[in-house]
Image (tube, rainbow over all chains, first blue to last red; front, side, top):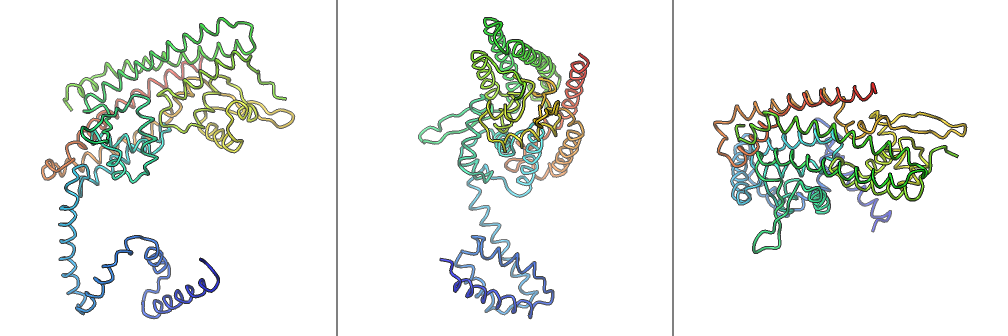
Length: 259
Length: 171
């Protein structure tokens, strides 16, 4: 528990650290010290016990700066080797430059999504599904760092609109989530799919208009009539644009896998 | 009292159904629900006050005023009237605009995206020989190429859209 005595004890330790630092460090950059200290106290990486053992062992070697530099290279290589042997069993985790490209592409999706008013979480998930074709919730968590809840909420949203489908992985209780498969399928499918949704919406509002006509002289009739007509007007414009997209050379080229 | 028209209960039910339909439609997929709820009621009502929105949506005053600010900033709604008591009436500019406002005036942004994507493709091209067979390269490269090609096309679509909007405004 946090009592005044404990706080004072801790502040005394802080005082010793700061004094030591300011006396020994030429640069005396307090902000640097603060950042390092905070990281040291909160970052779980410093909880790994062998870290301190490693530090002591290396100290005992009494290496010069240059000796340490070359010794560090040995450690550096070892870490890279371990990374590939430990992570390569996960083909969906891309390495090095490829991961960098992936992050840049996801970043692009995110910004484009924001223009459409879509949340970054939502577009990030779409992005990874587009790149990887299919992923489990667990894999998505690993790639995005998002919480379990955020991922399942957004996947449900995508599933409800029909953009993403879910399939059971045989012999397990896990599911793959797929964004329409290959890019050539995705582009035409989403186009046709949007057109279908547009048609569904049109017949829905047509039905509502007929329903409304049964209720003339009711309060609000004129306004609602005008508003539903305006919605239908929008759906017509939307259809016109979808037709242009679907009949474009671009979509045809993607479908024919020419890109 | 606000002069905004109350709906007959039967029309209110019809309105509620329409709002639900819009909220579940793909037009709004991925957008914040408080934002789309308020937008939907502007679609069905055109003119609304904060009090009226609270009644219709059940959202808190704070949320509503925040979303109203957003809609004002985006030019989707405007302040059309202030009553003697200081009550503000907000008016939706057009139903069409409420659906597509996100795409309007984003020409510049899309051009920037175009540049960014071209740069990514260029970087990948430079390393293509070396990395082509590395896990993941082809998948990313294909998407980057397709989106890169789609960019000029997107700009053309935006032109069409803006023309349609201009026609509507004249009407």
